[in-house]
Image (cartoon, rainbow, N blue to C red):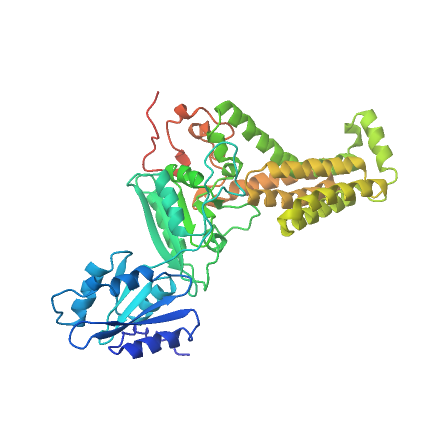
Length: 501
């Protein structure tokens, strides 16, 4: 086997002949029908010059370029000694809209053409002009569908990365807001932007993000999850270690704490790193309401998370192993309900949980006009019919309903998925060992959470390791005027957020 390095392919230069350049471009793109060539003739020099404008249908708009090139001011009164001077004249004086680039390599020309730029070629010149004629057809800025709030901004990110960076820039007008852009994906050449506050972010964190992104070698990046699975800490876990948001205000708040945002073209979901467990229980609305109300709602979310993960397990454990823990009247009622049920409590709970997961997934995939109606009717009809048929008890229907509603209280959808998986694991532990199995499962989950990291930051910060200064926006939220410092576990350059009052 020959292990000698392969020679790198030299970039192909443009030809002097116009027709050769056009045919090379069309051949490289497979003579695709959406590549348009607009022939032009410019009356200058001695016999005039033939040229061509190339663009991709639907990605660019050459209307203003054609108007400029074919207008009377396109050719100045003074004569041009060479085609190079004519191109410089077009670049500086004629084409007044959009950015204009000099292009001399075929590979660079193809990349610019396929990203919506118009290409101006002139016969007799091995240099071309790429003109910023992108015409973006994208969804308008709308209210986020997933992370909605009662009080707060109503704008959400779109699929256009330039619009998204502009929305972040509008939130933070500081010159310390820096953005680095790169292209990832051999085939898609997807634009990816690293956004951070230069005067706040920890240098080692920024270097780690750059290094992980630079190591990605893949043919396509179609959504931010492609990036997420490549850069997240390589740990086997059910819990998400990268946060995502479609709200500019959430991203701006994270940047001001010393975090880094990763924007990907083609998706409204922005990645935020590093991530801690408590971050998934926080909502942007917590900071737009009074601190006492925000604290109450946040504690309610934690309580709902425990209900979503533990309620079926406790029902299975108590009804199977620990009936003596129930009041006598309640015990008689449960026994009467379960008298005609042919399945053990675990099988009963498992069947109901699986059925509800099927209904939930079906409601997501159905058309919006009928999805909500089908899910509600399906839940009511199946639950009532199952109780009347004696397949499950009425108490189990109540338990499953409480579990499902509590799961929807969790603000982060990906943490809700983790809670659903943990729920089934704890049900198995409860059916096998009773309450002892549940407590062992909880201890294992806590130990696992404490072992996780996100870009070198402990996943359970600031609870483990415990930091008293960082508890001002953790389980509870103290008044905003008391936020003197940024989170210590982020190791920011500038720790002070505001002056003491």
